[in-house]
Length: 272
Image (cartoon, rainbow, N blue to C red; front, side):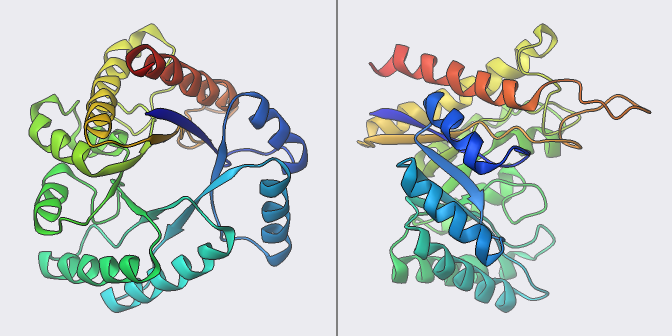
């Protein structure tokens, strides 16, 4: 099993034409980003992916006022993403306020659509969405054996307002279904620590790494040949700023790449 690193474009302000070679040089094999782009931007992205021989993970975000509208949005965006030949799709699915019946309806239909188009879809454990907390996710994983995840536990740490080591059974269940990892570090009061390199966040970093280790171990056990990871630290307001000046407290480019390189080294030490 090998670990492949994907670089998100969230917060990247430099032109793609100049930043893509830098991303390549840093060892990333692909790009992860949304496709809510103009036609010209989509053409540029497609061309640059081919030029740099990058793989692609598409991000989609279901929307609408009803479950049916979210399902229709899911299929429309999935079909649109197919033109970029993504290795997988990361989806922000549904709404956190839905009832159990509504959530069941969404995943029942979404999984049929996934089967129809045969593209791996990772539904993200994201705030504001159906999988916003451990317990709802656990129930749905048990109910839908085909449901696969993008595990971003930083959201759950924020929602639960604590490190979730008291929910190891649920994390183990997530590990069985995870096909993509967003390696951001959260803390009790937010989904992103100011700087994962800072010693005051050592406990949070180590906790998340323990959970990612559980995912890797399970992926290795089930014969996964390629594990994918994106160090998805975000720009302000995810990245904290100083009051009045709004100056970021850390360099987003640096902390994202530091996280990618750290996890690559940790992975090699375990699976080389």
